[in-house]
Length: 196
Image (cartoon, rainbow, N blue to C red; front, side, top):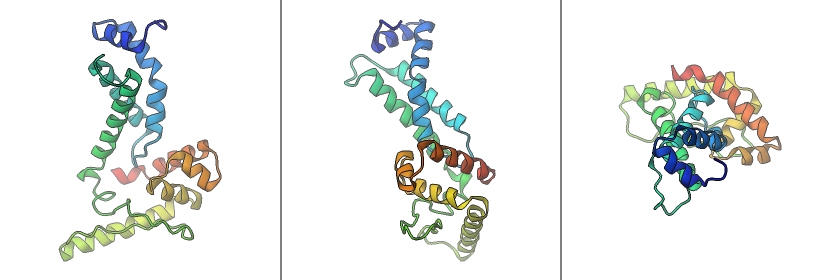
């Protein structure tokens, strides 16, 4: 198996050779793992994202054609990433309105002197009743984050919500990559009840 190219293994896997399929799934699991770890989803386990990454890998194996301009490795990376991103977007649908529609997490303040996470309510025109509910949701989530997470975890979450990668966060806070990963795992666990 190791003597065959990825493209040859894909061809064999698609012609019904289960050992080639298993070999490719094992070979690229590390890539899927790395991609899944670079995403964060409140209320979801890392295993859920890894599963989505592996589904993306499986789709890549099943849909790759040798006529593709990219190598299988590049194609697999794109398929895995898209599948994980799709899962994240899907999870942020209306069923999670308290975290997405009610509060825009993408508008986190970049003020470095301020450790608090600044959340704002979207600028859509709301009825007075909806506006009151949105304000209550905003206060509730901000209070939960403040009371549930340590100051360190709040800093990590703030940087993550600003779009910084694990590597950037580790450099900004002068901590190891593993510390960032552990902090985000704790945050995920502590805030998982918000999804319910």
